[in-house]
Length: 118
Image 1 (spheres, helix red, strand yellow):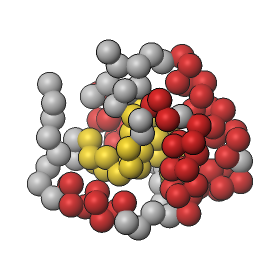
Image 2 (cartoon, helix red, strand yellow; image 1 turned 180 degrees about the vertical axis):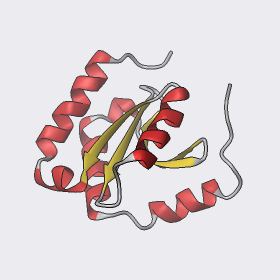
Image 3 (cartoon, helix red, strand yellow; image 1 turned 90 degrees about the horizontal axis):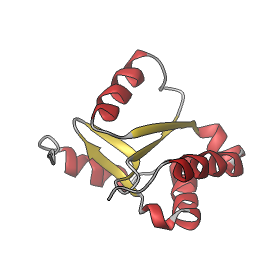
């Protein structure tokens, strides 16, 4: 069943697309260049959250996390998103900026194990 985002989420997501962090810019380039078949989208509303990147084809959400992330809030958020059928992968910003090959390898591993949504 398709769930629609709460009011205002789409406008907020559009605003966030216009203000990406350096890590989000680098990760977006990496996703578009290395994984075009996954058809990732940026700043995607899922339930009451806005996810950094999502592939509806592979049911995968990727989050680029800065220093404000981690802890119980992220665990709750991940649980809600995973309850909708998505897998959540999180990468620290410094990992994206300093080791993009390792990030790409981990994403490739997940995509090889998962199968696209029918």
